[in-house]
Length: 334
Ligand code: SF4
Ligand code: SF4
Ligand code: FES
Image 1 (tube, protein in one colour):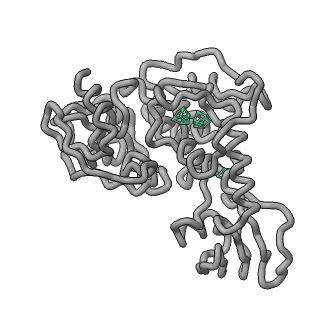
Image 2: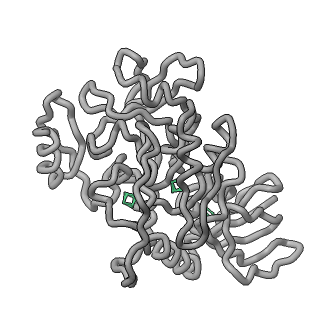
């Protein structure tokens, strides 16, 4: 089937969604996606970030679709024409969805471990408004301890359901669901029940925000001060291919390798993620090249990029903006 998105055409298999067709084209036509995750069956359709305008339904029926549609769960028709980044309506809708997602979101970025690799930060940067119109109190949840490996910050959750799909599809038995509805909806009890197994750490990787973070990495460093390296080991449970986030020779965090859409290439087990924190546990493949558009790879949010050699204890060359010098020296003092 042929589909045209923002003037660029691509041939796809029947059953392909508009979002995946856009990903085949790549670049600015790809809608943001906060809940769809290609490796989790049934994901998508929750966040409405991926709305697009179908300006021509198909060759057989060229009538435009009256409403914007969620591209992650709308399949293409032959001859369909879609407007993504080029549509004013889509742009307004993405702004509204972003504003909606941020209504109850805490202003935690300065202390949130997800900062620098957070899909919501990226969404806010690309589609957010400068100021909030929200005057009511923000919704908050009681803190829940879900174990020694994963930190749950329910206040930051955007209810994308991805972690529930990890619980459903990677852990041995399903014992979860979103509790309550509307403003009271929360994911908690089922996470507690699914957390104690060899694959639970993947919830951290699929969470698009800082609602589920790695307790072993908590407050250790800002992610952009770490030196990401691809590494592997022989593991009898998973692929053993990971990204290490190092400071000097110290491994601060281990995650699965992620692609340009911030999705993992292969899920990894908790042994690799939490138990293997010595360099001798790993064979280093080389520096990680980040495809994802985010601050961690290139300081994308600053206008001018400058390479500065900071005086770090291990003589590492850190690349950053000159104005980051003070922050980095403070980290080194620590
Ligand atoms: S989840 Fe993202 S947007 Fe929310 S506080 Fe953390 S870094 Fe900021
Ligand atoms: S905790 Fe994270 S992955 Fe789970 S529903 Fe909330 S935002 Fe999504
Ligand atoms: S990515 Fe399509 S609705 Fe969330």
